[in-house]
Length: 254
Length: 185
Image (cartoon, rainbow over all chains, first blue to last red; front, side, top):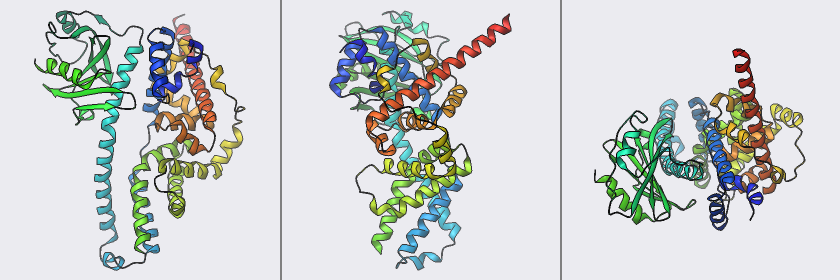
């Protein structure tokens, strides 16, 4: 497919609507076409910006409880059933309050479960956006004693980089990145022809991700995450989980 | 009888997690708190009444959003929206979308307020499809089900909607830049 053909498919790529084969072909093309890569990056950023802006209103609690009463009443009318009279002894407000508490607890779990793989997905986005970027690293150095000091004053924490000599990994460089308005470090490692992003952020509640490793089947990325010295580490790459684990071990040794 | 109340509970379990997304969507359609609340309430009531027609295992979210949207379109605000916005002919505009880098970056780097205004100013037919895709993260097929249009139409409206957003924001940026330049003069 030519560049012109791909330009009509960029949005489908960003919306994750390409088939796995198409996606692979596109990534191969984007690796050699700065124009498509830049456009894809801008589209992905735009999509994220729209999502942030569009997710704006929460249903008022009052609407929620009114709906719940409505639903219960309709349900009760339909089934003027055996268990109804027993419940009538309870004051209506107490029942509504209890239902709300249950609902809140249920929703909390739902939301937190929904959120976790999602925030991991956002790291995969950051990783891809960076791959597509024209200048993926801001500090280009394979020397950990250059990269680490570069972050001083740029991110509100400090971290240690491992000795990579004798390991199959190389350090390419780093850049400052943001996640939920929080600055963090993104380190780029190389493994053979693959690129691995290591994100380091201060641990925040949004980042409290429980599964330690995670394969995003829709994007075929592997992720691995842990906390260390109250910092949240997230590794993202297309290398296999075992290799990612190897790098994680090196980083944890510090 | 037990079956009926079980069905009610099943509906509740399915519908309550959608409350925030439905309300958010309703607010973006109506721009009015009270109207959005009524819309969500009416949607839930209609959906519960028609719940027997819903096939278990199919896309409940798309079904709910479709009911909400249809309810909106028959409301007064919705009818006005439909009348005041002539849709472009549904051809494949995506094929003719051109990429201009400054324009594309305008959207990515826009402030929240500017983006909010631009989204609000988007004709409803484009706003809804952008919201469903980017905010609700629905697949094209799911959006097609909500809007009851072919997938090709979803794609062309999406491309057009995003293009309009980019143009609006690029224009906004030029405007700000011109204003600053004038100040300096």
